[in-house]
Length: 431
Figure 1 (cartoon, rainbow, N blue to C red):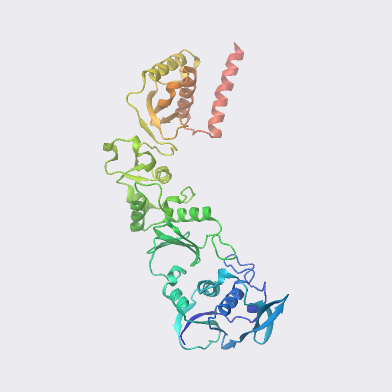
Figure 2: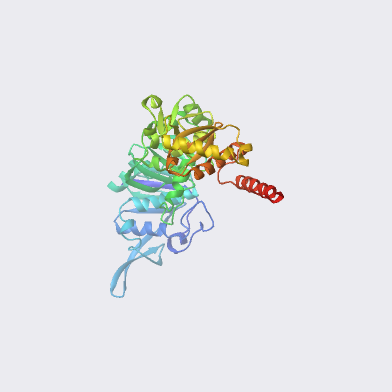
């Protein structure tokens, strides 16, 4: 008979197979199995599904049998290990553990927890090895399918890795659907979600069943890994995949707001290109968009903030909102701005105005009404419905941003405005 052989360093103790709650992993943050239930469920599942198997601790074959017992009128098959009766039965684990995948995944995962160089191979020779734990599992159709498609479940020795860094490893994804691995073990699969790559990370958070428990954190981790990527061909492949669309695959849902900086390779790939946020292409002319790379605005914004010399349509460094100049704003708005400037020039504030250049723009963020950029005060075309007094206040705010260089919603800018107000109070008090 042919078997699937799974072998790892270290000889398993019989108690690890029979005592619920017996585990040496409780203090190990890098492993699962803190309650020691998975290995027991695997034995129960293999027996229940009629899959022949053998376990060796070193060179010793651990004898596993069953006997029937009755409890409250129901018959159970109690598991006996090396002649010792246990409280384990073949009904443990339930339907989620039926079939070949669940028990073999658990056995191999436990082996990897102990030994990253664990062996998985077909064999007809059934014998243990000193210093090792060895499982032999009947190579039926389900087990053979697992062996032939092992990289769908474990990616540790997968040769199709494209790049690796401290956050993630990315792999080719011939299946085209979402598959995430933690420490090389499949922890998330969703055939309804398309994904350009498969991802492995030690940072993914999983539960006791080795299933991904925090989807937001996974998207954050993968986003950080992509920002660190120094593999040019992979970055180009991702950009080509993301361009001209903001939805469709798992990569579109990644979180790019981490503190991890983009690698220099990202700059090298994009330095000679025109970039635009895909959400705002309608703001630009066909001439502007010629040969432009349209990417999700979250990525575009972070790239521009890190690499000031990138050519991003309508976006300046450290800007959260994209804008495009309007050459012919409404006469109503122009007249209101003329009146606002006329009013300010008749007040003491005129000493702080240095003949500013005013431009009219459309902002991508509907909440942005003004901005100081490139020595110009930019005013939203939406201000045509605002009063002259309100427009005057916006001109003051943006002019002060230009004088100080302080950003919106910062304590430094607030203190600056308070100081101006207080100095004016002192002047007024003298009079």
